[in-house]
Amino acid sequence: MTSLRTARGCDLGYLRDDLGVDVLTQRAGYLQELQATGLATLTGTVLRLTDAGKLLADHITLELFQG
Figure (cartoon, rainbow, N blue to C red):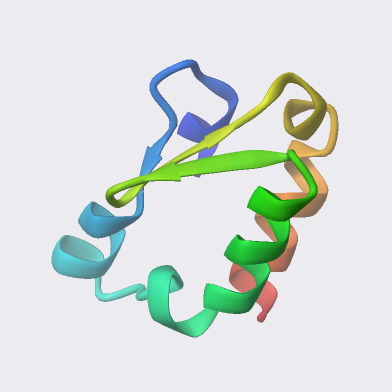
């Protein structure tokens, strides 16, 4: 999840397929909220934080995995 801080973002498909962590399904509502509030974009399975989202990266990571 540290890749969220990078321009390339985090491939949630990789987390699901290779690590068994299905954030795409388990936190779908939160992912939609992040997009609606302009904190992140989701392209395919790649989650990228916007500049505003990067300011909240620790909180967003906690919310994604705490679910």
